[in-house]
Amino acid sequence: MAKQHVSTTLNGNAVEFLCESRQSLLDVLRDELHLTGTKEGCGTGDCGACTVNVDGRMMCSCLFLGVEAQGKTIQTIEGMANGDKLHVLQRKFLEHAALQCGICTPGMLIAAKTLLDHNPNPTEVETRYWLAGNLCRCTGYNPIIDAVLDAAKELRGA
Image (cartoon, rainbow, N blue to C red; front, side):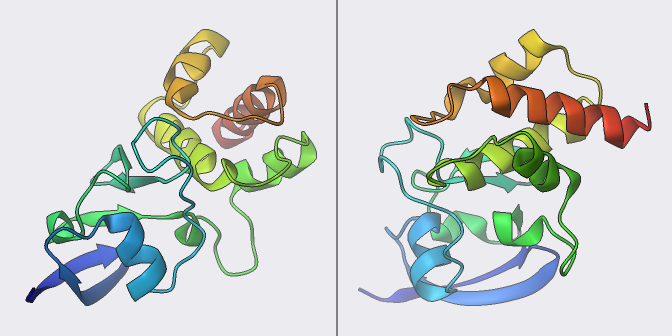
C-alpha cells in the first residue's frame, strides 16, 4: 500500500510525515514521529487516553486517520510544557495528586486544556461534563476536577 505525504502543524512546528491511508493518528504519533506521550487505552474511542487537540477540538487520535491531519494544527501532551516549565495544568495535576498510573493523564490534560481554552471559568459541573469522555481507573476523578478548577483559577489570576 502506498504511503501518503502529510504536512501539518504539530505542537507549533511544521511537520511532514508519510503514513498509510488506514493508519491512525495515534499510530503515526507513536510509531512514525516517536511522540509516545499520547497513550492507547481502548483503541475504540471510548476511553479518551489518546485525546489530542486538532484545530481547537478534542479528538480521539485512535479514531482520527493520520492522513486527515493534512493542513491541521495538532497539539499533543508533548506540546503542553514550555521547555522545562510545566503548563499550569500539569503542575496542578501534580499538586493535587490527580494522576497515578499515567495512562489517562496525557488525554485528560489535553481535554482539560481544551476546556480552559474554550471556557476559562468553568463550574465543577461543566468540568465534569467536559472530561466525561476521559476515563480514569485510579484517581476517582475528584483530584482531577480539583486540579482543573485550581488551574483555571490561577490562569484567570484569581
